[in-house]
Length: 171
Image (tube, rainbow, N blue to C red):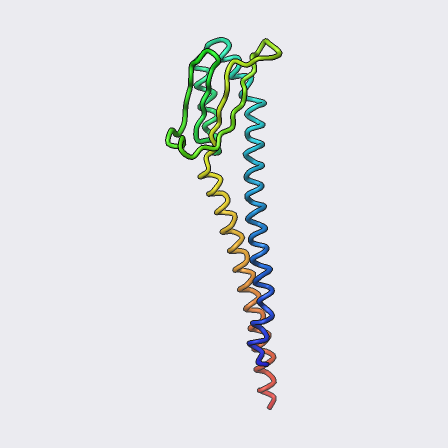
């Protein structure tokens, strides 16, 4: 069997392994992005909800809007909406995201009462930032595999050239 055919057959499992590695890295990247979003929502619940509760309780629309602007600085959120228990609605962000929403709703607890709420905070996830990060990670993984493949190809070509060319010089 010619060395080229033998080489081609031996690299097929390497290619399959590279595709499996690329798929695994893509899945892990997606899971990391999802966990990052969950951590962001948890952070919002710990830091922004108490401040929003006080602003709604004291009827301070400027403070509410400032908190919403701070939330929108996070690239994970496309839109922030607050529904107060009195019926007032505050909305900031991309209104075009209404059709393709993945929203998280959090109750805003009353500041001085152990139970009850003064409103609801709705955070709409910006899928474009998640997709851009996932695409960037997949492109990096593919480039890593291509560079590794080129290095291996160069090494194998050098070895084959040395093993096939130099014995012919001795004849």
